[in-house]
Length: 246
Image 1 (cartoon, rainbow, N blue to C red):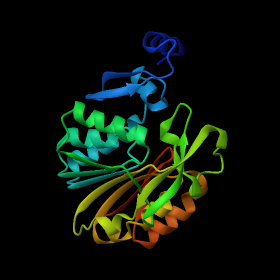
Image 2 (image 1 turned 180 degrees about the vertical axis):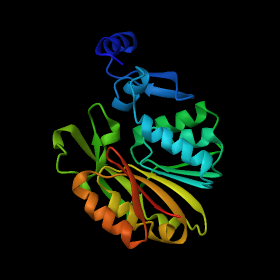
Image 3 (image 1 turned 90 degrees about the vertical axis):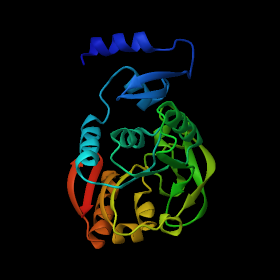
Image 4 (image 1 turned 45 degrees about the horizontal axis):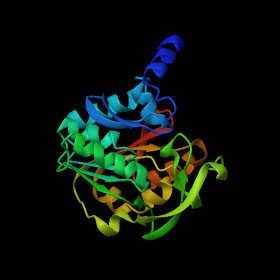
């Protein structure tokens, strides 16, 4: 897409005079409630490339890999879960999204695509403990950058975030799976180690492929943790790191 084409698309789709405007669009073969004021939504609205390589790998893996469970950790507005449901190849889909704004938008997208019986959504974050935790809710143009305060990246600027509290849970305390083939996507803005620590039982007792967004400063720690569980990194796409033990 050229700069001129991008500019024209922005002019066509922009909602002048309104900070936030939700509309339904047909994108990625799905009906999606999208907000032009939000970064990911806007890229989809103006048809600008967004994680195309990751989506292609993900949907291809689900169609061909024989996975019977997909776990979406940090689901945002639900794109990965919705794509998983659309493939109709995964028997069970669990999604976790603690930011209430994203959670409600995600649930609307489930309804729009008739996936109410296909996707289970939990309004909590995953961690290595159960309870409540300080949450930094992004107040700018990207709700996907909301994060848990204790493990927020050093680049986090307080003026861009509003402090609130969310519920967190240890996956292994609430779910028990064994001998399953599982695909896990994780995008939790710096809280990856704690979320993975909370699902060591799952990672040990099942054959899993993981797509984990990991910033460079945390990569060595995550690689060491995953190696300790018998997982190897087999691919990278931007900040997304892929691990497997099948």
